[in-house]
Length: 295
Image (tube, rainbow, N blue to C red; front, side, top):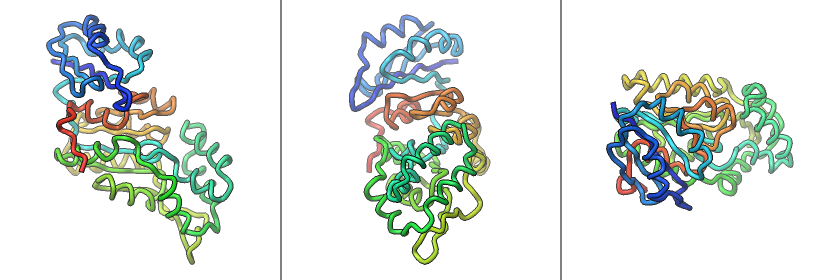
């Protein structure tokens, strides 16, 4: 069985060289091919040696590098389903923190968000508590937050459009709010989006979320739902997120990815991305720059 070590750097500041690749090639057993997916950015090293042994041996050194890496079985690298978190994964902010900023409460709310994402606090209860602080906020602040604060992560559009073009299903499931997921899905191409619904009456936030709450169970259940609908195996599925409520779906996927993740998520994931942008998820599947779809 052939295995892969893929090395991936940040496309905005490529760091990979032939010399670096040679260092790791020399430490792998039975290397059969070295293929650049993007010059200086991403490279595949195909080898026939043991996957677990290679991972255990090379990971300590790889963690000290300024690029990311992923070990995989070559035959199952291409995915047919992607389930992704939104806040701090597909977009660069936590929407509820930015909403709170307009109420002068960002510091307080951000601290709760961080604790919840680290897994130190119950997500559902903290969500209710944070939304309660927004009671009376004009719904127009939602649009202002989206226009002024919500920015896509680099590579987000390319990731989703390329996977869609190659027949994969792409699903956005967020513990945030449908106001934002619906808009992010529209501009990136996610085929399905799910999130919490803010209760709004007479143009004002009531400080409540309309049940049911979208939480870690919803994320995992959504993955299992789309897996069953398409008759997929675990190997067909990739999940990506950054917070503790992403762990169940990350562990359920054939390849679970922590994207600039909290400590608990990094420990739970198969692959942790600390340097690269979201196109790394394409390189891990073997797509090269010439395969990317951007429009």
